[in-house]
View 1: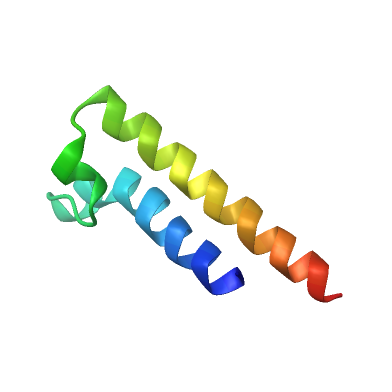
View 2: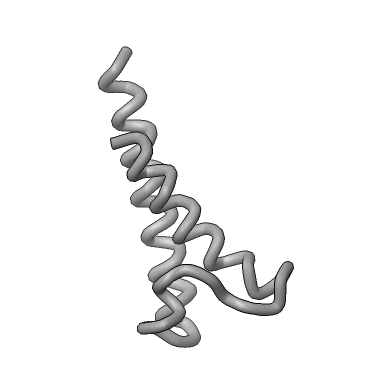
Length: 61
């Protein structure tokens, strides 16, 4: 589950900063969403991935 969380974090948070650093979007969210909806969805996916990763690590301890 931690691996899935990391993938979600890359997809979400990467989508937020890719346009600023690379001048283009990557991932799957930009294919479906645009503008503010894309920004909000990227943040939600990134936070969900972070929580999933933290939960998986805490469960292993």
